[in-house]
Amino acid sequence: MNVMYMINLFREVYNLMNLHELLLKNRSYRKFHQEETIRTEELLGMVEATRIAPSPANKQPLKYVLVNRSEASDMLFPLLNWAAYLKDWEGPVEGERPSAYIVMLGDRSVSAFIDWDYGIALQTILLSAVEMGFGGCAIASCNKDKIRQLFNIDEKFEVAAVVALGKPKEVVVIDDVKDGDIIYWRDENEVHHVPKRLLSDLIIGILE
Image (cartoon, rainbow, N blue to C red; front, side, top):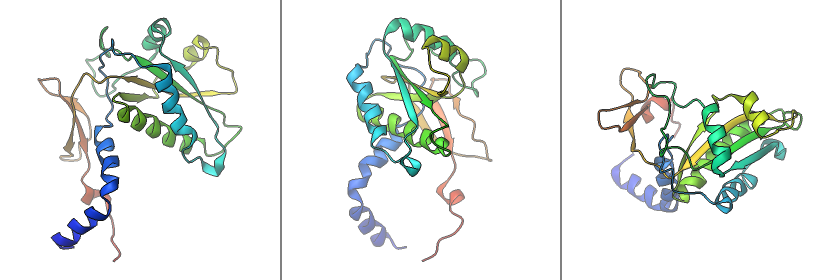
């Protein structure tokens, strides 16, 4: 492909560049401006985006618990595990914790393809949060039994993940993977680095 062809192609898909920008900003944030609140209406807007998103066989098996009260947030926070690769970091300190959470639930009796729904919905929530000026982190490593007890969740629903949300208080950058190392890390300035594989590593064939 020559340079002019690529320029013309980018012009044709110019309207998609806003999505590209959202994807670049949609990082897994783990430090927040805790004092910046997220209104219930904004959480509802994030879930509304999942409502109109695709669902395999249109089964729509997901349900949600919205949390933006400080008391409930304080009880939920210690049930979450934050960063497996950062061995010496126990999670955000008071003042840097999330302002709100969305607890994602699923009913496997409704759909055999529920894991697809989880992925679609998590990405949709996080992109919606970025569009609103927030950021988040999808957390599947958590004490699901205690979360069930905390919110009195019916046994027919499995606790799939918790999306922590807030105004990001950290810089997250993308690096190229080197020597196959995909482990994220923080430098001396607390900048969070996330190695991503090269596009050339992902494409195994082009048929033109």
